[in-house]
Length: 213
Image (cartoon, rainbow, N blue to C red; front, side, top):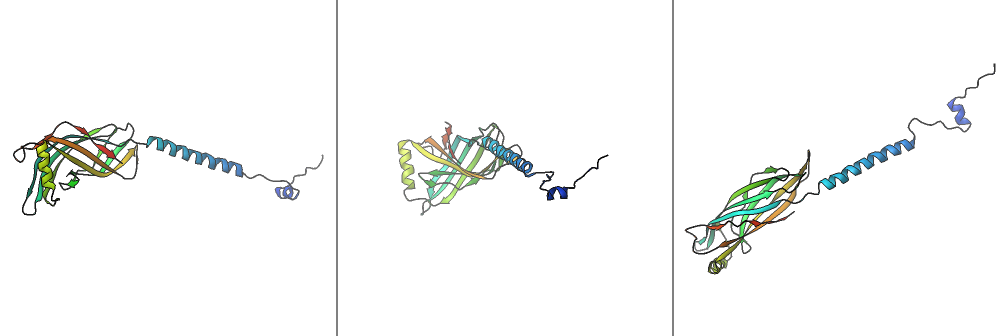
């Protein structure tokens, strides 16, 4: 019987042989590459999903109950009721409205204080009615404000802007984004005769508002 020569790994190394480890570097590199590719693919798909369309706002109706100047300083008193319709056009993205404030302006001047609406969530392709009463008591305005209102009355129409600003978050599944600021601008053109102050000026035509995000 011939002798069996068993060489140890140490002896092989001395002779120039290499002993492979259980997890060579190529396998580790392959694992890291696979994980990185999976993460990049997830981010790309998330970006495609989270390319949401900004919400749509429509001015449904508005009523001006008070818009007059009083006192020696000619301070403005105003009372305006409005109804907006907010629509989420996204099929897979929900919207959290964390903040939303509305106010009225005329000829570039703010004629009511800000009114805050309660926070709410809007599901996929859902619509919500939003109503607010805008009030202004003793607001300072430019000296030409009264002249502009009288001029509008002589023309027979009053053009008023109803504006909103706030912050929203997008929701996809259980994931919720950070906050994004948005602004809304609606234009109401009202017939303006001798109805004030005995009766309100009304807007019932409906108008699409512009939204910036």
